[in-house]
Length: 288
Image 1 (tube, rainbow, N blue to C red):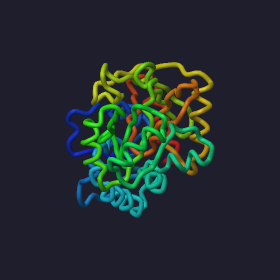
Image 2 (cartoon, helix red, strand yellow; image 1 turned 120 degrees about the vertical axis):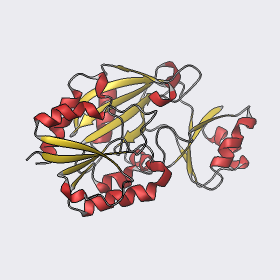
Image 3 (cartoon, rainbow, N blue to C red; image 1 turned 180 degrees about the vertical axis):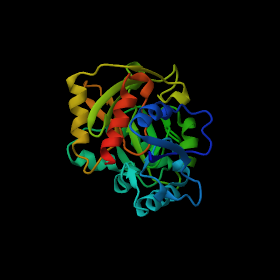
Image 4 (tube, rainbow, N blue to C red; image 1 turned 135 degrees about the horizontal axis):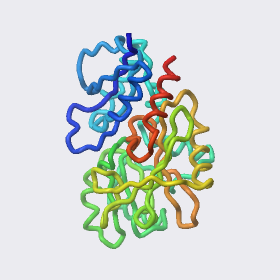
Protein backbone atom coordinates (compact mmCIF):
# COMPACT_ATOMS: atom_id res chain seq x y z
CA UNK A 1 0.00 0.00 0.00
CA UNK A 2 1.31 3.48 -0.86
CA UNK A 3 1.85 5.96 1.94
CA UNK A 4 -0.78 8.68 2.09
CA UNK A 5 -0.01 12.39 2.20
CA UNK A 6 -2.41 15.33 2.42
CA UNK A 7 -1.52 18.76 1.09
CA UNK A 8 -3.45 21.49 2.89
CA UNK A 9 -4.85 24.05 0.47
CA UNK A 10 -7.83 26.44 0.09
CA UNK A 11 -11.39 25.79 -1.00
CA UNK A 12 -11.09 28.42 -3.73
CA UNK A 13 -7.71 28.59 -5.49
CA UNK A 14 -8.88 30.73 -8.41
CA UNK A 15 -6.42 33.50 -9.22
CA UNK A 16 -3.49 31.90 -7.40
CA UNK A 17 -0.32 30.40 -8.87
CA UNK A 18 0.18 26.96 -7.30
CA UNK A 19 2.95 24.57 -8.34
CA UNK A 20 2.57 21.79 -5.80
CA UNK A 21 1.24 19.34 -8.39
CA UNK A 22 4.80 19.14 -9.76
CA UNK A 23 5.72 17.08 -6.68
CA UNK A 24 3.03 14.46 -7.24
CA UNK A 25 5.05 12.48 -9.79
CA UNK A 26 8.27 12.41 -7.74
CA UNK A 27 6.29 11.40 -4.65
CA UNK A 28 4.46 8.65 -6.57
CA UNK A 29 7.84 7.20 -7.51
CA UNK A 30 8.66 7.11 -3.79
CA UNK A 31 5.41 5.24 -3.11
CA UNK A 32 3.37 8.21 -1.91
CA UNK A 33 -0.21 9.04 -2.82
CA UNK A 34 -1.08 12.75 -2.46
CA UNK A 35 -4.49 14.31 -1.82
CA UNK A 36 -5.22 18.04 -1.70
CA UNK A 37 -7.58 18.98 1.13
CA UNK A 38 -8.87 22.46 2.04
CA UNK A 39 -7.79 23.31 5.55
CA UNK A 40 -11.36 24.48 6.28
CA UNK A 41 -12.93 21.11 5.40
CA UNK A 42 -14.87 19.81 8.38
CA UNK A 43 -14.65 16.36 9.97
CA UNK A 44 -11.53 15.21 8.15
CA UNK A 45 -10.02 12.02 9.49
CA UNK A 46 -6.41 13.19 9.66
CA UNK A 47 -5.20 9.91 11.14
CA UNK A 48 -5.72 8.20 7.77
CA UNK A 49 -2.65 10.05 6.46
CA UNK A 50 0.98 9.27 7.07
CA UNK A 51 1.83 12.96 6.69
CA UNK A 52 0.03 16.27 6.28
CA UNK A 53 1.98 19.05 4.57
CA UNK A 54 0.83 22.67 4.75
CA UNK A 55 0.96 24.10 1.25
CA UNK A 56 -1.34 26.67 -0.39
CA UNK A 57 -3.41 27.79 2.62
CA UNK A 58 -3.18 31.39 1.50
CA UNK A 59 -6.42 32.53 3.09
CA UNK A 60 -5.54 31.45 6.63
CA UNK A 61 -5.03 35.05 7.74
CA UNK A 62 -8.79 35.59 7.46
CA UNK A 63 -9.24 33.28 10.45
CA UNK A 64 -5.86 32.54 11.96
CA UNK A 65 -7.29 31.03 15.15
CA UNK A 66 -9.36 28.52 13.17
CA UNK A 67 -6.30 27.70 11.09
CA UNK A 68 -4.24 26.96 14.19
CA UNK A 69 -7.12 24.86 15.54
CA UNK A 70 -6.98 22.76 12.37
CA UNK A 71 -3.22 22.29 12.75
CA UNK A 72 -3.76 21.27 16.39
CA UNK A 73 -6.33 18.67 15.29
CA UNK A 74 -3.83 17.23 12.83
CA UNK A 75 -1.06 17.22 15.40
CA UNK A 76 -3.27 15.57 18.04
CA UNK A 77 -4.32 12.88 15.55
CA UNK A 78 -0.78 11.52 15.67
CA UNK A 79 -0.16 12.21 11.98
CA UNK A 80 3.12 13.85 11.06
CA UNK A 81 2.51 17.58 10.43
CA UNK A 82 5.04 19.49 8.38
CA UNK A 83 6.13 21.96 9.23
CA UNK A 84 5.50 21.15 12.93
CA UNK A 85 2.74 22.79 14.94
CA UNK A 86 5.03 24.72 17.29
CA UNK A 87 7.02 26.10 14.37
CA UNK A 88 3.83 27.31 12.72
CA UNK A 89 2.54 28.92 15.91
CA UNK A 90 5.82 30.81 16.24
CA UNK A 91 6.01 31.84 12.58
CA UNK A 92 2.39 32.94 12.14
CA UNK A 93 2.96 36.26 13.92
CA UNK A 94 5.59 38.55 12.41
CA UNK A 95 6.92 39.35 15.87
CA UNK A 96 9.19 36.39 15.20
CA UNK A 97 11.30 38.92 13.28
CA UNK A 98 11.88 40.83 16.50
CA UNK A 99 13.03 37.64 18.23
CA UNK A 100 15.44 36.85 15.40
CA UNK A 101 16.75 40.41 15.48
CA UNK A 102 17.53 40.03 19.18
CA UNK A 103 19.49 36.90 18.26
CA UNK A 104 21.68 38.85 15.84
CA UNK A 105 19.81 38.44 12.55
CA UNK A 106 19.76 41.61 10.46
CA UNK A 107 16.19 42.53 9.60
CA UNK A 108 14.73 45.59 7.92
CA UNK A 109 14.47 48.29 10.67
CA UNK A 110 11.05 47.81 12.26
CA UNK A 111 8.76 49.57 14.72
CA UNK A 112 5.99 47.56 16.37
CA UNK A 113 2.69 49.24 17.26
CA UNK A 114 -0.56 48.11 18.90
CA UNK A 115 -2.57 50.39 16.60
CA UNK A 116 -2.17 53.33 14.27
CA UNK A 117 -3.50 56.86 14.57
CA UNK A 118 -2.53 60.09 12.87
CA UNK A 119 -0.09 61.12 15.60
CA UNK A 120 1.78 57.81 15.65
CA UNK A 121 1.73 57.67 11.86
CA UNK A 122 3.35 61.10 11.66
CA UNK A 123 6.10 60.11 14.09
CA UNK A 124 6.96 56.93 12.18
CA UNK A 125 8.61 58.82 9.35
CA UNK A 126 10.99 60.53 11.76
CA UNK A 127 11.67 57.39 13.81
CA UNK A 128 12.46 55.37 10.69
CA UNK A 129 14.33 58.27 9.00
CA UNK A 130 12.37 57.76 5.80
CA UNK A 131 9.95 59.78 3.69
CA UNK A 132 8.21 56.56 2.64
CA UNK A 133 7.20 53.72 4.96
CA UNK A 134 5.45 50.36 4.76
CA UNK A 135 2.86 49.22 7.28
CA UNK A 136 1.55 45.68 7.51
CA UNK A 137 -0.42 43.49 9.93
CA UNK A 138 1.38 41.02 12.15
CA UNK A 139 -0.61 38.12 10.69
CA UNK A 140 -0.90 38.25 6.91
CA UNK A 141 -0.25 36.44 3.66
CA UNK A 142 0.11 37.45 0.01
CA UNK A 143 0.84 41.09 1.00
CA UNK A 144 -2.76 41.55 2.18
CA UNK A 145 -3.27 44.95 3.88
CA UNK A 146 0.38 45.85 3.26
CA UNK A 147 0.39 49.57 2.49
CA UNK A 148 2.96 52.18 1.47
CA UNK A 149 2.63 55.63 3.06
CA UNK A 150 4.35 58.83 1.99
CA UNK A 151 5.25 61.59 4.40
CA UNK A 152 4.17 64.38 2.05
CA UNK A 153 0.89 62.73 1.04
CA UNK A 154 -1.22 62.34 4.15
CA UNK A 155 -4.32 61.73 2.03
CA UNK A 156 -3.06 58.23 1.31
CA UNK A 157 -2.94 57.49 5.03
CA UNK A 158 -6.69 57.08 5.37
CA UNK A 159 -6.87 53.41 4.41
CA UNK A 160 -4.01 52.59 6.78
CA UNK A 161 -5.59 54.53 9.64
CA UNK A 162 -8.84 52.65 9.08
CA UNK A 163 -7.17 49.25 8.68
CA UNK A 164 -4.99 49.55 11.76
CA UNK A 165 -7.20 51.54 14.10
CA UNK A 166 -7.58 48.56 16.41
CA UNK A 167 -5.12 45.86 15.32
CA UNK A 168 -1.35 45.59 15.89
CA UNK A 169 1.03 46.36 13.06
CA UNK A 170 4.64 46.71 12.04
CA UNK A 171 6.20 49.64 10.22
CA UNK A 172 9.38 49.69 8.16
CA UNK A 173 11.14 52.14 5.86
CA UNK A 174 10.42 51.44 2.22
CA UNK A 175 13.40 49.50 0.85
CA UNK A 176 14.14 51.00 -2.57
CA UNK A 177 16.09 47.97 -3.76
CA UNK A 178 12.84 46.00 -3.92
CA UNK A 179 11.88 48.02 -7.00
CA UNK A 180 15.38 48.51 -8.44
CA UNK A 181 16.86 45.05 -7.78
CA UNK A 182 14.11 42.86 -6.40
CA UNK A 183 13.65 40.49 -3.49
CA UNK A 184 15.69 37.30 -3.20
CA UNK A 185 14.10 34.05 -2.02
CA UNK A 186 16.29 31.13 -0.96
CA UNK A 187 14.64 27.74 -0.56
CA UNK A 188 15.68 24.96 1.80
CA UNK A 189 14.32 21.41 1.99
CA UNK A 190 15.19 19.50 5.17
CA UNK A 191 17.65 22.36 5.84
CA UNK A 192 19.54 21.74 2.58
CA UNK A 193 19.73 24.57 0.06
CA UNK A 194 17.67 23.82 -3.05
CA UNK A 195 17.34 26.91 -5.26
CA UNK A 196 16.86 30.66 -5.34
CA UNK A 197 14.70 33.15 -7.19
CA UNK A 198 14.70 36.89 -7.71
CA UNK A 199 11.25 38.48 -7.52
CA UNK A 200 10.56 41.92 -8.95
CA UNK A 201 7.32 43.90 -8.78
CA UNK A 202 5.52 45.25 -11.81
CA UNK A 203 6.12 48.89 -12.68
CA UNK A 204 4.50 51.23 -10.18
CA UNK A 205 3.99 48.52 -7.55
CA UNK A 206 6.05 47.18 -4.65
CA UNK A 207 4.43 43.77 -4.18
CA UNK A 208 6.48 40.96 -5.68
CA UNK A 209 3.88 38.18 -5.62
CA UNK A 210 2.73 36.78 -8.97
CA UNK A 211 -0.87 37.45 -7.99
CA UNK A 212 0.04 41.17 -7.95
CA UNK A 213 1.91 41.10 -11.25
CA UNK A 214 5.39 40.35 -9.94
CA UNK A 215 7.87 38.51 -12.13
CA UNK A 216 10.31 35.77 -11.15
CA UNK A 217 13.51 34.31 -12.42
CA UNK A 218 15.94 31.68 -11.23
CA UNK A 219 19.24 33.10 -10.01
CA UNK A 220 22.58 31.96 -8.70
CA UNK A 221 23.31 33.54 -5.35
CA UNK A 222 26.58 34.74 -3.92
CA UNK A 223 28.07 33.65 -0.60
CA UNK A 224 26.85 36.83 1.10
CA UNK A 225 23.20 35.95 0.52
CA UNK A 226 23.61 32.27 1.32
CA UNK A 227 25.46 33.06 4.54
CA UNK A 228 22.71 35.49 5.56
CA UNK A 229 20.00 32.92 4.83
CA UNK A 230 21.72 30.06 6.61
CA UNK A 231 22.36 32.19 9.68
CA UNK A 232 18.56 32.45 9.92
CA UNK A 233 17.86 28.77 9.28
CA UNK A 234 20.40 27.75 11.91
CA UNK A 235 18.47 29.63 14.59
CA UNK A 236 15.30 27.57 14.06
CA UNK A 237 14.96 24.47 16.21
CA UNK A 238 13.24 21.28 15.14
CA UNK A 239 12.55 19.66 11.78
CA UNK A 240 11.95 21.83 8.73
CA UNK A 241 10.61 20.17 5.60
CA UNK A 242 10.72 23.52 3.84
CA UNK A 243 11.85 27.05 4.54
CA UNK A 244 11.89 30.12 2.37
CA UNK A 245 14.18 32.97 3.36
CA UNK A 246 13.28 36.31 1.74
CA UNK A 247 16.14 38.80 1.67
CA UNK A 248 16.45 42.40 0.48
CA UNK A 249 19.45 44.65 0.07
CA UNK A 250 19.67 47.67 2.37
CA UNK A 251 21.20 50.99 1.20
CA UNK A 252 24.64 49.93 2.52
CA UNK A 253 24.50 46.78 0.36
CA UNK A 254 23.99 44.37 3.26
CA UNK A 255 21.35 41.64 3.12
CA UNK A 256 18.42 41.93 5.53
CA UNK A 257 15.70 39.43 6.33
CA UNK A 258 12.31 40.54 5.01
CA UNK A 259 10.41 37.34 5.83
CA UNK A 260 11.10 33.80 7.00
CA UNK A 261 8.33 31.66 5.53
CA UNK A 262 7.85 28.39 7.41
CA UNK A 263 4.09 27.82 7.12
CA UNK A 264 2.80 27.99 3.54
CA UNK A 265 5.38 29.53 1.21
CA UNK A 266 5.09 29.04 -2.50
CA UNK A 267 8.19 27.04 -3.40
CA UNK A 268 8.36 27.93 -7.12
CA UNK A 269 9.29 24.47 -8.38
CA UNK A 270 8.97 25.70 -11.98
CA UNK A 271 12.03 27.90 -11.57
CA UNK A 272 14.49 25.14 -10.68
CA UNK A 273 14.81 21.83 -12.46
CA UNK A 274 14.96 19.04 -9.92
CA UNK A 275 13.53 21.06 -7.05
CA UNK A 276 10.30 19.03 -6.95
CA UNK A 277 12.39 15.86 -6.73
CA UNK A 278 14.46 17.33 -3.90
CA UNK A 279 11.29 18.25 -2.04
CA UNK A 280 9.86 14.74 -2.48
CA UNK A 281 13.04 13.11 -1.23
CA UNK A 282 13.12 15.41 1.80
CA UNK A 283 9.52 14.56 2.66
CA UNK A 284 10.09 10.84 2.20
CA UNK A 285 13.19 10.94 4.40
CA UNK A 286 11.53 12.92 7.19
CA UNK A 287 8.44 10.67 7.25
CA UNK A 288 10.40 7.49 7.87
